[in-house]
Each structure stands twice: as C-alpha cells, then as structure tokens.
Image 1 (cartoon, chains in turn red, cyan):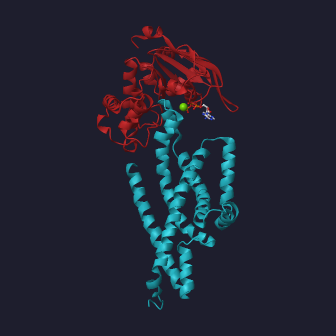
Image 2 (cartoon, chains in turn purple, blue; image 1 turned 60 degrees about the vertical axis):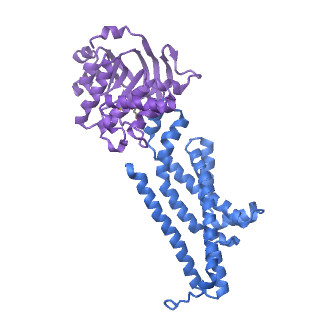
Image 3 (cartoon, protein in one colour; image 1 turned 90 degrees about the vertical axis):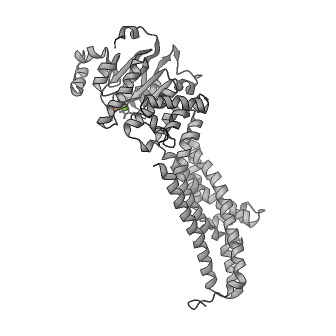
Length: 252
Length: 217
Ligand SMILES: Nc1ncnc2c1ncn2[C@@H]1O[C@H](COP(=O)(O)OP(=O)(O)OP(=O)(O)O)[C@@H](O)[C@H]1O
Ligand SMILES: [Mg+2]
C-alpha cells in the first residue's frame, strides 16, 4: 500500500507467459500473462468458473498447463528436469476447505512438513510451530485435532502449516469463502499482516474490501482471460471494461 | 441329558473339538496374514490408476468373486498346489479368495480419503510416497480396519468349507465325532456354539476398536 512503488520495482519472481489450460475439450485458461514481484500481494477476482482456481493450481503444478510457460526466478518450471517437490516447497497454498491433515494434531499438522520434507529436528520444528501457532492465536490448541476446531481456527492452522515451510510465495484460494461471517475477519487479519510483512501472495477472493486495502495489484479474470489489471483502488473506482463494471457492480 | 439331548459324548470327545478349533483358528490366522498382505498390495496397486493394471486387477477380482469358494479349493488342492499339504492348500485358496475382498476394502478406504489431503501434502513439498505414508494411508487404515475385522469374522466361518479336502478343522472334527458317536445332531450343536462364541467375541472386540479409532471425530 504505502510502498506500492517500491514493490512495483521489486524483482519479478514469477512470470506467466501465454498460460493455457484445457480439461478435455473445455478451455479454461486461454492465455494468461502475468508478472508477480517479490513482496507483492496480487489479488485475483472474477466470476465463478472463470478459471481463478485453475490458474492458482497451475502455478504450483497441481494442474499441468496445456500450453505457455511459467518462469520462477527466470527458469521454466515446465522443464523435464524440474524437481517438482523442491519447487512446491517454495509455494504455500491455502485452500478454501482448509485441507488440514485429519489424522494429525494441530502441532503435527504444522511440524510434519519441516520434519519430513526439510528434515528438521523434532525439537526445532516444534519450537517454530509453537511460535507460529501463537502468532495465529492458537497457542492453546496445539494438541487438538482438526475435527475439534472451528472453520476459522482450521484456516489459521492451515496458514501456520504453510508458513512453517518458509515459502517464497503463498497462494490463497478463497481462504475465507467457507467460513461463517464472524470468522472471516480473524483470517483476513492474518493475511493482511502477512502482506504488510512483505510476503509475496496471490490471493483469489470475493472480499472486495480486502482486495482494495491490501492488494498491490488487482487482476480481474473472466472467461479464461485476464480482462483488466492494475491498481486495485483505481480499477474499483474506474473500471475500463464493461465486464469488469458488471462484475464489480454485483460485488460492491 | 439336556432338553432330551444327550451331551454325554463330550466327556470323551471334547478334545476333538479343541483340536478342530485350534486348526480353524490357525487357518484363519494364516489366511488373515497372507490375505491382508496380498489384498492390501492389490488394493494399493488398484488406486495408482494405471490403466492396464486396473483392467487386470478388476478382472481378477471379478473372476474370483464369481467362482464358488469350494470350487477354488478343489482347483488349488487337486490342480495347482498338488504337492502342498491340505492345510496349506486351504490357506492358499482362502487367501486368494479373501484377498480380493480385502483389495476392494483397501481401494474403497483409500478413495474415501478426501482428495484435498493429498493436494495439501503435495503443496508442502511431500513426495507422493511421503504423502501416502504420513497422511493418506493412516487415514485409509482407519477407514478399512472395521471392514477388515468383519472380513476376518467371515473368514473364520468360511474356513469350515475346507473340510472338503480333509483339513481337520472344527467342522471336519465334529463330523468325526458324529460318525464315532452315531449321534446325528448334538455334535453339530456344540460346533455351532463354538463358532458362535469365537465370532461373537471378535465382533465385540471390533466394536471396542472402532470406538477407539473414532475418538478424535
Ligand atoms: N479437474 C477438472 N476437470 C474438469 N473441469 C474442471 C476441473 N477443474 C475445473 N474445471 C472447470 O474449469 C472451469 C473453471 O474452474 P475454476 O475452479 O478454475 O473456476 P473459479 O474461477 O475458481 O470458480 P469459483 O469462483 O467457482 O471457484 C469450470 O468450468 C470448472 O468446471
Ligand atoms: Mg475457485
């Protein structure tokens, strides 16, 4: 926000070029071009079915792009010799339905990545996890199981789990859409804090207030294309395309 | 005398029952071990979504399910494993039979784990193997254990069929008792009660296990 200009000059860490994705005959992404800079919060909005989730899932290769390229620090991630697990480690993802590991306690949900993927010691991983859980306000829930938590608490654990891997980028796919209204705020608050601390984030959301206040860049997607892109406040105040206008008038 | 039935033969013949019961339990035990190993492996292969493999496994499962167990036993004993002692031939054919059911339970148990669990695991950089080992399989086991235990109970009852190849398990020995005592009915009642006690106790244990497993839900 305050340092938008600084961020806009930041190093480009992800560059998406002509990204296409088909599911069978269904063309979902029809050519997406986007640059994501270090420390930037890119907010993606658009109607249901426009391909927002598919776009995020292509970024961390949960879906394999049909065409185009994605560069991470200037290197294509679609090359044959990419170590996909190593690459995914650098991308956190927060899901609409949390996807906490149901068989693990809250503490183990957060430590399992550092322990098994980064081979951290149990002591070190637990120490860091405890600090992260405290940071998201769940210091007292470490021994609970996911089934014992509210939606908002689950999502905060999911964010802590992601942060424990110290990712370079975090992808949020409608992180608050499945929450009861009174729990949306607690999760948005944490996301806002992350953005302020300089985390690079790509956020798919329907929360227009968040998009305006926290987003450094707003991307409006429709029909598999980026229709409009730029400063969130400017676009919301003065959308250039009819489809953006229609969408915003429904959302605001 | 009890309700007009004569159980006095038990004094002399009860050891027949114990020996038979022991063999029944041994058969069940070995079949459970082998059937679980083979069945779980088959079920895990089945969820890899390898096209040819799926066709082969599904074909095999349908074939075994479509052939009566007694015919399978005869085929194994007289046709394939002719050099094996009857006991082990029985274990082999019961393993073949129960493993396809266990494979189906395993497949269902794996597929019942929410797809998001695998995605979340891959997103924190776990390999497919790690995700299966730490996240998916533990949850699948929880899904599968109750039906596996029920399969074991069914198995104990199914072992009675191997009396046809003269394995001296409980059904076979009770027939021996009938032949020796010239009693048509009473020895069978004892057999039935023994099967019932064993399966009933196991059923209760499964109930306890299930409650333990779902303590966190
Ligand atoms: N795995 C898949 N197989 C087939 N079609 C899919 C798959 N995933 C998504 N789609 C289709 O792709 C289109 C875009 O889906 P996507 O989930 O990316 O939209 P979205 O913008 O995230 O929508 P929403 O706001 O509802 O989440 C939809 O028509 C959807 O049905
Ligand atoms: Mg979506």
